[in-house]
Picture 1 (spheres, rainbow, N blue to C red):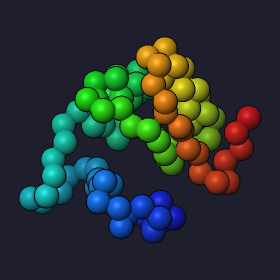
Picture 2 (picture 1 turned 120 degrees about the vertical axis):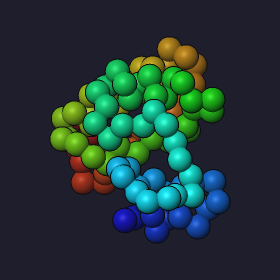
Picture 3 (picture 1 turned 90 degrees about the vertical axis):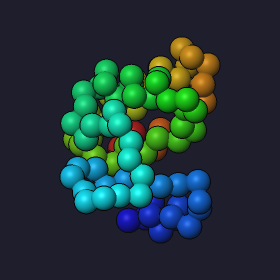
Picture 4 (picture 1 turned 180 degrees about the vertical axis):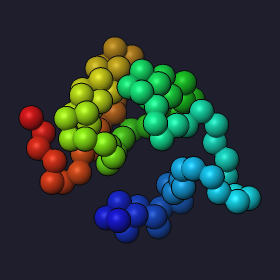
Length: 93
Protein backbone atom coordinates (compact mmCIF):
# COMPACT_ATOMS: atom_id res chain seq x y z
CA UNK A 1 0.00 0.00 0.00
CA UNK A 2 2.89 2.38 0.66
CA UNK A 3 3.91 2.14 -3.00
CA UNK A 4 0.40 3.03 -4.10
CA UNK A 5 0.24 6.02 -1.77
CA UNK A 6 3.65 7.26 -2.85
CA UNK A 7 3.37 6.73 -6.60
CA UNK A 8 -0.25 6.58 -7.71
CA UNK A 9 -0.52 10.32 -8.27
CA UNK A 10 2.27 10.24 -10.87
CA UNK A 11 0.88 9.78 -14.41
CA UNK A 12 3.95 7.72 -15.37
CA UNK A 13 2.81 4.86 -13.12
CA UNK A 14 0.12 2.28 -13.67
CA UNK A 15 -1.54 -0.21 -11.37
CA UNK A 16 -1.91 -3.71 -12.79
CA UNK A 17 -4.53 -6.12 -11.49
CA UNK A 18 -3.02 -9.40 -12.58
CA UNK A 19 -5.47 -12.17 -13.32
CA UNK A 20 -8.87 -12.22 -14.93
CA UNK A 21 -10.58 -8.86 -15.08
CA UNK A 22 -13.58 -7.63 -16.98
CA UNK A 23 -13.07 -5.14 -19.79
CA UNK A 24 -10.09 -3.01 -18.78
CA UNK A 25 -8.38 0.24 -19.62
CA UNK A 26 -4.99 -1.22 -20.53
CA UNK A 27 -3.99 -4.71 -21.55
CA UNK A 28 -0.47 -6.07 -21.52
CA UNK A 29 0.68 -9.39 -22.87
CA UNK A 30 3.53 -11.59 -21.73
CA UNK A 31 3.18 -10.94 -18.01
CA UNK A 32 2.81 -13.91 -15.71
CA UNK A 33 2.32 -13.76 -11.98
CA UNK A 34 3.91 -17.21 -11.86
CA UNK A 35 6.82 -16.75 -14.22
CA UNK A 36 10.08 -18.40 -13.34
CA UNK A 37 13.26 -16.38 -12.86
CA UNK A 38 14.35 -16.71 -16.49
CA UNK A 39 10.88 -15.72 -17.66
CA UNK A 40 10.95 -12.59 -15.50
CA UNK A 41 14.45 -11.67 -16.74
CA UNK A 42 13.32 -12.22 -20.33
CA UNK A 43 10.30 -9.99 -19.65
CA UNK A 44 12.64 -7.14 -18.65
CA UNK A 45 15.02 -7.74 -21.58
CA UNK A 46 12.16 -7.54 -24.07
CA UNK A 47 10.89 -4.19 -22.81
CA UNK A 48 11.44 -1.31 -25.19
CA UNK A 49 12.37 0.91 -22.23
CA UNK A 50 13.88 -0.96 -19.32
CA UNK A 51 12.56 0.07 -15.91
CA UNK A 52 14.76 2.22 -13.72
CA UNK A 53 13.30 0.70 -10.55
CA UNK A 54 11.88 -2.78 -9.93
CA UNK A 55 9.96 -3.45 -6.70
CA UNK A 56 10.03 -7.09 -5.59
CA UNK A 57 7.11 -7.41 -3.21
CA UNK A 58 5.88 -10.99 -3.69
CA UNK A 59 7.38 -14.38 -2.90
CA UNK A 60 9.68 -15.83 -0.30
CA UNK A 61 12.37 -13.52 1.06
CA UNK A 62 15.19 -15.81 -0.12
CA UNK A 63 13.73 -16.06 -3.63
CA UNK A 64 13.38 -12.26 -3.81
CA UNK A 65 17.07 -11.86 -2.92
CA UNK A 66 18.11 -14.31 -5.63
CA UNK A 67 15.90 -12.54 -8.19
CA UNK A 68 17.28 -9.15 -7.06
CA UNK A 69 20.83 -10.36 -7.72
CA UNK A 70 19.81 -11.78 -11.11
CA UNK A 71 18.14 -8.54 -12.20
CA UNK A 72 21.14 -6.49 -11.09
CA UNK A 73 23.51 -8.84 -12.97
CA UNK A 74 21.34 -8.63 -16.10
CA UNK A 75 21.36 -4.84 -15.91
CA UNK A 76 25.14 -4.75 -15.46
CA UNK A 77 25.68 -7.05 -18.47
CA UNK A 78 23.58 -4.73 -20.63
CA UNK A 79 24.97 -1.53 -19.11
CA UNK A 80 21.56 -0.49 -17.80
CA UNK A 81 20.83 1.21 -14.51
CA UNK A 82 18.16 -0.65 -12.55
CA UNK A 83 17.56 -0.27 -8.83
CA UNK A 84 15.84 -3.28 -7.27
CA UNK A 85 13.77 -2.44 -4.20
CA UNK A 86 12.76 -4.99 -1.56
CA UNK A 87 10.11 -4.51 1.13
CA UNK A 88 11.37 -2.42 4.04
CA UNK A 89 11.16 -5.33 6.47
CA UNK A 90 13.23 -7.66 4.26
CA UNK A 91 16.88 -8.28 5.12
CA UNK A 92 19.29 -7.45 2.29
CA UNK A 93 21.87 -10.17 3.04
